[in-house]
Amino acid sequence: MLIEIIILAMIAAFLGLRLYSVLGRRAEHEEEVATTRFERGEDPRNQPAQTIPAAENARTERQIAAFPPAIEQGLREIAAVDRRFDLLTFLEGAKGAYEMVLEAFWRGDREELQQLCDDDVYESFVAAIEQREADGHTLDNRLVRIEDTTVHSAVLDGNTARIAVRFVADIAALTRDKDGTMIAGSLDDAVEIRDVWTFSRDVRNSDPAWLVDETDSA
Image (cartoon, rainbow, N blue to C red; front, side, top):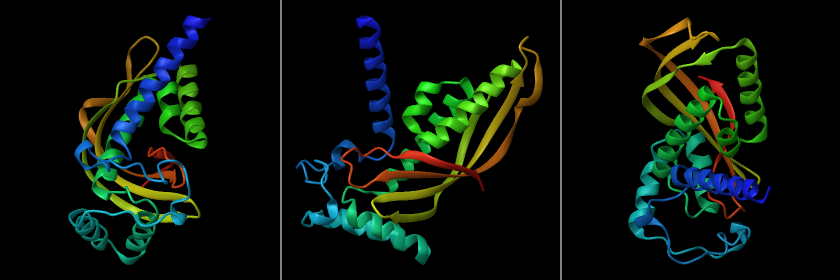
């Protein structure tokens, strides 16, 4: 029993580090060295403004100003309370999380999905996996490429930041029955898929990870 607990703890730590590496943090050379009160879990609205290098401020301004007013306002509100927020880094992380979630769902990896999604999204994925298993079906899907990743909407709802990201991706999908016989799809012809996934994070939390809290088709 002790060995099983240790193994489970190691798996959970590995998945947590993997998610941390792809979503919600800066590249190593961009991270702030000093530990802020926000990183210790205090409300960022109550902390004094942190000193941000002028080059980073200018880059953030250019990123945010390029969006329509409604999105720009939401991003500015999020950036105002989350001083570590960087839009390009976030979008790269969202792209990585999109790929990880899709592949985990296709292979029926419940543990990884639970690390990446909030409860509602996780339960919907699990329900689909269970139905697939009951039917004796397996998926042999491939994410060929992600052609476009952009912000669809952004809002600060109380202490929760929510950013919806629109993905345009080419996916080759193939379904097999319990005998391994192909019953639908083809790996030779990729289909363009348009999804809008919403990522959320409590800005009071020192954990920089964002979770998938909604999935829709564009």
